[in-house]
Structures are given as C-alpha cells and as structure tokens.
Length: 298
Ligand code: NAD
Image (cartoon, rainbow, N blue to C red; front, top):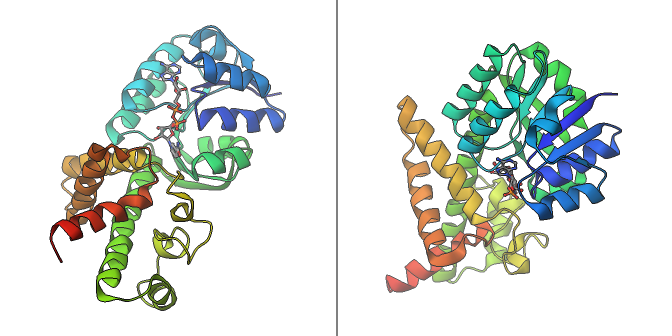
C-alpha cells in the first residue's frame, strides 16, 4: 500500500488528504495549525508531531501550502528526511521561480518531483473534482496520475518542471480579466437602463460569452448558483484572485511578456482588497466598478 506524507492540511489540503484516505492510501499528516490537524485526524489522517515524521517512511510527499517561500522551506526540510526516489508533489499555487527552485532541490537528492497546482476551490477539494495542472517529466506524471485521480477529475500534463504553475497563473489571469470585463458590461448596462437578464440572454449566446458570465455571473438572477445570489460568499476569495494576479504579473515582468489587462485587473483587485473585501468572492469586483461609476457621476 502506497503511503503518503501530506504537509499543509488547510482549507484545500485537509479535504484532499481526506479523499486520499477514502481511496485507501495510508496518509500521515503535518500542519502548524492545531485546528487543521484535528480536522484531518477526524478524516482518518494519522497525525505527526513533526514534518520529518510525516514523510520519513512515505513513498510520496505532498505539500499544499500558502506560498513559494513556505514550499521551498518545507521541501528543504523534508528532502533531508526522505530517501532518494521518494516522489514529491507540490499542489500549492506558487511563483514560477520558487517552483523551479523546489524541482532543482529535489533533483539534487535524486527525488522525482511535480508541480501540480489545482483549480476547483474548496468545494472541488471536498468533492474530489479538482483540476490538476501538472509540470514535470512525463514518466513521473504517469507514476502520480492514479493518486491525483483520487483527488481530482481532470489531470492535465502541461509540460516540464513549473509548467503546471505557468498554466495555473495564465488561466487565472484570464479569469481575473474576464470577471472585470463582465462586471463592467453589467455596470454599463445598468447605467443604460438595460436589464441584467436581457444582457445575459444576449451575451450568453453571442460573442461576449465566457465562463465568468455563464457559470459565475456577477449579478444575482441569471445563474442561480453563482455567489452573487448568496451575498458574494466565496467561492473564490478576492484575496486569492489578487495573489494569483500578482503571480502572473511577477512572471510577466521576469520573462518580458506584455500583459496590460492583467496589470489593470491586479490594480483593481488590489483596491478591492484594500477596501477590506479580501474575503468576499472575487465576482463582487462589480461592486468596486459600481462605486467608481457613481463617484464619477456618470
Ligand atoms: P490555508 O491557509 O487554508 O492552508 C495552508 C495550510 O498550510 C495551513 O493550515 C497552514 O497552517 C499550513 N502551513 C503553513 N506553513 C506550514 C509549514 N511550514 N508546515 C506545515 N504546515 C504549514 O490555504 P488553502 O486555501 O488550503 O490554500 C493552499 C494553497 O492552495 C495556496 O497556495 C492557494 O493559493 C491554493 N489554492 C487555494 C484555493 C482555495 O479556494 N482556497 C483554490 C486553488 C488553489
């Protein structure tokens, strides 16, 4: 039986580890937070009092941590505790540079490694329906595929080391920009006296169609399940959208890509967060656009 050391049992890692237990894997877990540990214990994860204990006898170590600096630091410690050949998988969303550094550290210890960030949020983590975007060598990907399938529905090999992170930040840059675009269209429609439903009925079957409109509509009514119908409870918190947009802009700057709309989306989400809205669903960015429109006296 494959044994897994799982580090980072928070909103995403907790339910992901629980799904591995359900699929029959032996999971040893470690987290700095006592609450996260207790929730994981109730889901059948064997608790460890140190990081090293969680990974020492594991065939595979998985990390699900807040940011690049946490991943690099944790991988440094766990690489000192594991045997060569142990597979390392980082599922966190982190910057490209840290992802490359983590892969290089693993390579130096003869450990195969993958970056495998996810989309699908906490509900996808609980339901085991995440999308995994995976970077790393193809044979390593094939070795991990069955395990990832216990936590996700779509498992996509994106290319070599850090390609998973690249796919994640490019996708979320599209999402951030498109949500602002859809929000802008609804605010303009309001000012022009066009109903939300009429704009939706036209744009959802016309060239303005996109996921932010048809699956995650930022106004209540047209898509009953979208967070706009539930006072913008996340969903996907605006603070996480800002994090991902910042990662996209950092990467764009480093590689010389021109992303003016990504830059503007980052600026707007920064303002939204500065207004204390970081824990609101990201589709509520429409409220910032409304506020600005009113201020402008349009
Ligand atoms: P979270 O803050 O709930 O969980 C992170 C966990 O890591 C916490 O429990 C924290 O105690 C633990 N941790 C931090 N440093 C540690 C260390 N040195 N050793 C052990 N444990 C440590 O965050 P989350 O929402 O679970 O997100 C995790 C990652 O997934 C992030 O990179 C995030 O961007 C990404 N992500 C989140 C979502 C979402 O909807 N929440 C969706 C997609 C991707």
